[in-house]
Amino acid sequence: MAYTGKLKDPLLDELFEAVLTLRDIDECYQFFEDICTVAELKAMAQRLAVAKMLQENRTYTEIAAQTGASTATISRVKRCLNYGADGYKLVLARLAGKAKSAQ
Image 1 (cartoon, helix red, strand yellow):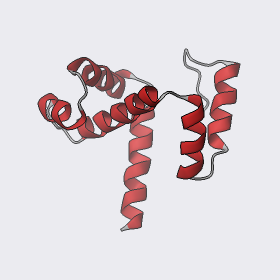
Image 2 (cartoon, rainbow, N blue to C red):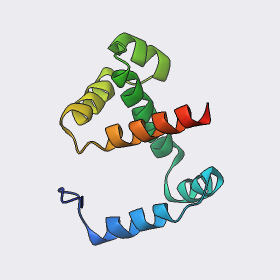
Image 3 (cartoon, one colour):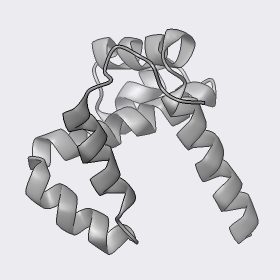
Image 4 (cartoon, one colour):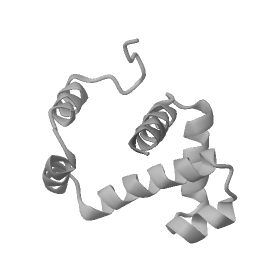
């Protein structure tokens, strides 16, 4: 299924194509260190952790304490999980499947 959402843009297509060329975590570190600030990377990692914890039905208090995320960030991630493009759900399902196959 092709993405047809509001973000569709040739520059973003090129960025995502670049990300898809990365072969492993070390290459991701190299690329993302160059393209993002430390704060941007930490914010993205935090949002992914929040999404995972929300899927585990953890409370806002638990999530905020464990991740340091604000309630506004937690609410924003929850809204994406419930009404977004299902990107979090896709990635979290794949990560869960990868973890199960590694056991």
